[in-house]
Length: 125
Image (cartoon, rainbow, N blue to C red; front, side, top):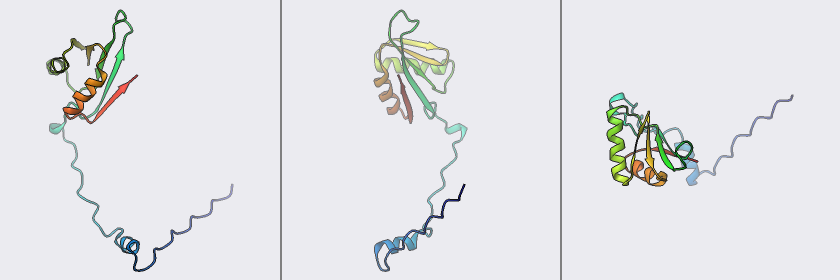
């Protein structure tokens, strides 16, 4: 196989133009402040990816909304689920690490979670 020819250098802007001034500044400006590393004490239970999906299988034909990926466990997850159920006005519970809500609530759950600071809410199926 033959080597690909090298790409030509990009054309230089005309002297005295605004683009020439920008080209001269390239690399001279600071990159900006360094992002702070995420520490364990600042970690939010809503900081990672949260998956919201609908299920009917194994539930007698009833549709439920399953919220999975919230970084809480035990009583804290139960309390979070209770707050979510009260905000949406629906029933539900906790099954393992997931919150199960009665009915098709995926759009409303996404709005509620993003309002509480969740950054990555994925609606599955």
